[in-house]
Length: 260
Image (cartoon, rainbow, N blue to C red; front, side, top):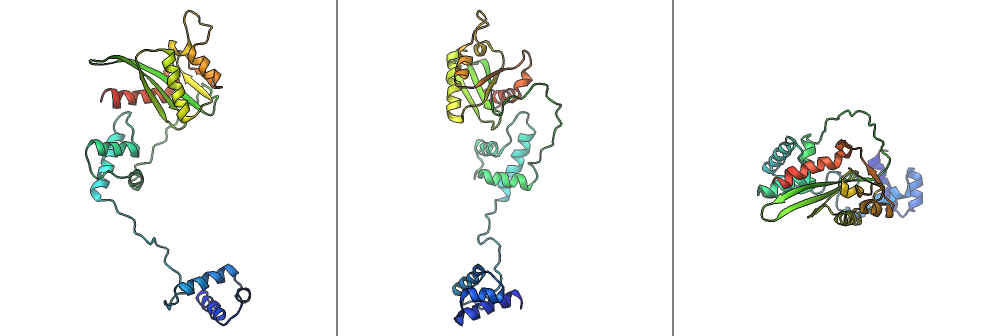
């Protein structure tokens, strides 16, 4: 007796008044299996082939993206990949659609599907030399100060930039001076939104470390971080690559925003 015949036999016995447990025992099936085919029979008793396997194909066909939009996604992705320091993710591609007034603007998951379909998400692995600078903490934020920069008719400003090295969530705050008070407020705002790190890593900017007059005293930034249980990590002097993630972000900030 094949599978189809077993299903029909189960229903024949059920309609004959036999108990579920007895049918399951005779056919060497579980009671769940018997209930399943009873439900199938009751819902599709008008269909003479109720006992056959149903197609597992999606009931609703996937919406196909227009060929023109797909080509635009591929074109923009390749342009961004060839542009130094450019962001190349789905959100950046969405932004380019909006900036170029291309309609309709595709969803993020649609863009990601097209990127994967055409193999544009395959990144070439780069072998990195072993680091001689220890990674002491699980969760680190990096911070840097960019400036001064100038706006015509407005004047000088600085930018306090912070980034989470794990998620790459970033924060930018424009300030008029390199005041440690403004820096502390920027750090507090970032931590309030994105959570506290184990360590805050930065260079030896005077506003970060404190005072040349009192080199052995803690500045406001250091005191605030330590008061929150966050360790301070100063990178070696003249070695900006130690803060590589925030430095790369600064380059993108300069290229995509300040020069735009």
